[in-house]
Image: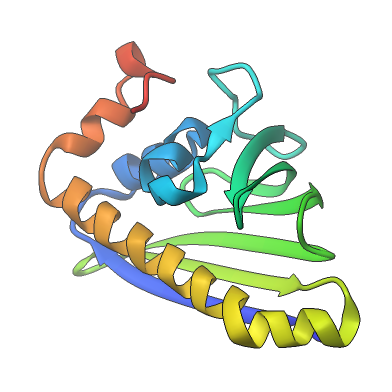
Length: 167
């Protein structure tokens, strides 16, 4: 079983409380996910993010609707949380989100470890498509996050009056 890993980092010039608040709202996944995936959260909102929280959603992969269920397996307010796929397209998916206050702002680190099903065919598919697609998805996220946090737009997705009211 081959475990693949993708790690991305970026720095946002905002207080850690604001950055973590945005990312700890599962509803905001739709804001930072490319439209082509047609991300749709199924779990009733608002979702309280904490260890043990289960989040159901769907995405489109190669034109097919895929159900995905994630479990929050670790949660440290303001600093980190981990989601693991318990149902979905991968044999294994482990995504850690870390937040660290630096002199330049908040460093956000995403680390994804994943295993593709179907043995050799899965490895070839990963090499030809999956790894590139995942990198594009995280690059899209980086771009949207930079844009949101360079303006005040992120506040639309963090204020209590708009909780769960994402685009």
